[in-house]
Image 1: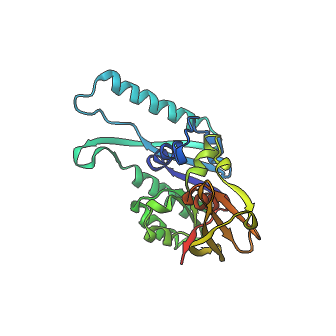
Image 2: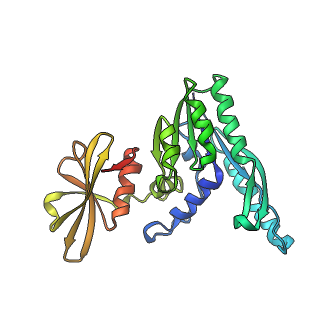
Image 3: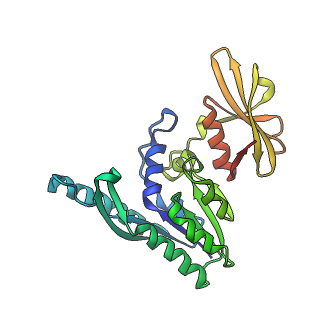
Length: 257
């Protein structure tokens, strides 16, 4: 059995960042059926907002209504359930701070693991608060899979997981039913001129190269992976787009030399 545990705050931040990825505007609602599709059950952890000082009742009620709408969307999706905590206003923390949500999520993960309910715990999170539960899962038969934005996740946290699955705008595009595939194309190296090697590394054991191509309309970028796409490259107008595409579509971390 595979269960998915989602840190709602991190998830929603990634969705918002993905909406304007590479200058595009993805405004479609999240289809949570697509998020939970590969799992037997899924749990979404979030909190209702706390009322800010001097915030009007009308504005606060709008926030509550939006959060309730989100929770209804989650709960009516395949296998999904919400688990809610509380928020409090902390000026020193820069606004809202959730209270006890991460602890609730970590306890649920461990409880399902030691109860024999699951064989795989898929954890969508990036906070170091989940360090103890990932450490504890190493003492169980349960496989831990961390889904995270590696650019905002500690290497210490990623190193504890049995597997790391990258999360970036291409995932968000699929969830919002607005995939970003059109930003990337596969093309032959022979059709691209002015090649400059920028970075090398490894992808699932295979060597890869990030290259810049100087064309007449300005530079473009491509990723070539040996033994994966032969003489072709994943080609895009920005280097980060090509890298994100490879990580998302082929579901593995790119490790730079």
